[in-house]
Length: 367
Ligand SMILES: Nc1nc2c(ncn2[C@@H]2O[C@H](COP(=O)(O)OP(=O)(O)OP(=O)(O)O)[C@@H](O)[C@H]2O)c(=O)[nH]1
Ligand SMILES: [Mg+2]
Ligand SMILES: [Zn+2]
Picture 1 (cartoon, protein in one colour):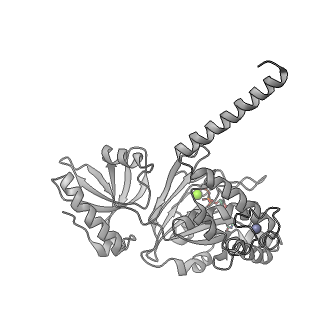
Picture 2 (cartoon, helix red, strand yellow; picture 1 turned 60 degrees about the horizontal axis):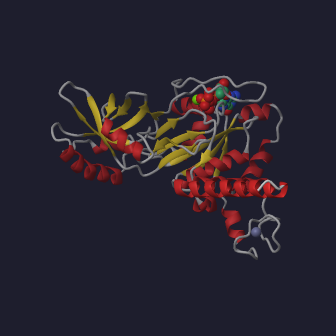
Picture 3 (cartoon, protein in one colour; picture 1 turned 135 degrees about the horizontal axis):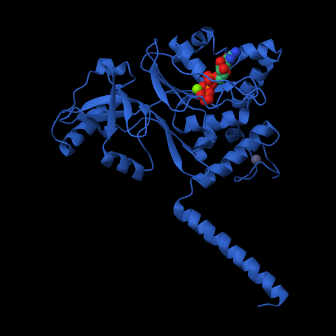
């Protein structure tokens, strides 16, 4: 049996579809865990041992049932900020999460070893935050775009430090125009002073009640500054940026979900050090629709837009964008390999090395 207040939870981003999923999963969960009634809440923070939750009435701290943690780990995932969860109270008033409501979107990043790390769940809009200072990097932005597109999340580019760049006499308007030209006009690009209330006005169309947004971007880009401006309060700590290279000091160390006065929810995240999008060919074609459209006109179906004759892409696309596309394509191909593929590839490499060694020895007359 599941008891919940839809009105109250919809203010935390619960959609009718998710409420339906929750009810269906609750029927299963109460069979597995008979006893006290189930509740539904949203994860606002994940700590080592506990999770902070919000339901319509307030904040609470809960633990995940070890069985749930184990089964999620087997699927290569874990409870994340933004997840909707079903839980039960024990006889001592302890709160236990017994199930995760299947998320509608789930962002994960892949580290240098190919391991997936959950970032956030159930997000509608990703604010891709990038400073108009040394942080400005269209290639990195294209990685974030791929990350959002893979999950069907609407990306919005927020360029911060407009005040700083303007005061320094930088050609901001030109930079913004070039960026729009490069990533395509379908993506909204806003340039703001994140410390000023005008940033909240600029973002207003994305802050509808019930929406969930996530802030993504490197350390020092201004994610927490923006969070505070949108909250109208200094809730999140913000940190200095090194003068030498404009990098932040990793001030935010955990992800947290906040409710905004507009009725939207926002998740502030720590700056990611490495970002390899967990994507595939389809992700790549939506992230680079310009390349995808032109590729149909190349003479060869498998054109790599490098030196092939009759290539329609090479001369029409910004060379830096094309280089980035190629790099991401390679990384994603590596990411989508199954462990069996990888073992096979490794075996091939080893065989080739062995062959090479044998050939050398033969030449030397050792064999
Ligand atoms: N003048 C000005 N300063 C800004 C702006 N955005 C951010 N800053 C400053 O940049 C520094 C870093 O901002 P934070 O909000 O802490 O950056 P963050 O993205 O949260 O960084 P991490 O938490 O480390 O990932 C702070 O000193 C902010 O005051 C802006 O638009 N204008
Ligand atoms: Mg921060
Ligand atoms: Zn081509």
